[in-house]
Each structure stands twice: as structure tokens, then as C-alpha cells.
Amino acid sequence: MDDNASALHLLDGRTVQVRPIVAADSDALVRFHEGLTVETARLRFFAVHPHLTLAEIDRFIHVDHHDREALVALDGSDIVAVGR
Image 1 (cartoon, rainbow, N blue to C red):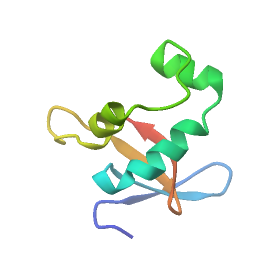
Image 2: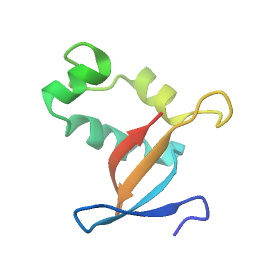
Image 3: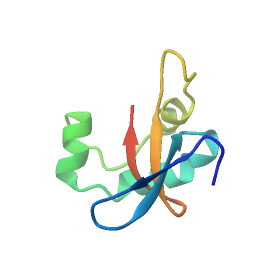
Image 4: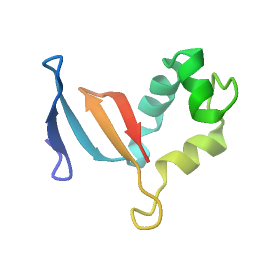
């Protein structure tokens, strides 16, 4: 487990690792976003938004962990949640 990660036990019995987002998460973030339902993406972006732009990916994975923070929950190498 990553030194910055914490294990979180979910009600469905799974255990996920929660840690700060890093640049290497970009592909997993794209897969996560593209796996969202249309309604979930609409609620996040207030519009139908099936794909992230390169600028959005860059902004979402590069946070300063001071004024801007983002945490990911991982099930293996798959992002299952993002909190900002």
C-alpha cells in the first residue's frame, strides 16, 4: 500500500485504498469518467459531458494539495470515486 493511502472498508465488503490523486492517475481518471452514467456526469458538470478534455485531465490530476485537493478511492488500479 502507498504510504499516503488509507484502507477503507465498504459496506459491500470491498476494501478500497484512498489517497491523494497523482499525475499517473490520468488514464484511470479517464476510464472512471467514461464509465459514469450520463446522469452522474450531468450532475457533476451541469451538462452532458461524456469525455474529459486534455485541459480538464491536466487540471484534475495536478493539484497543489494546499489550495486545491483531490482524493481518489481505488479498487486495485481502478478509480471508483473522486473527492475534491
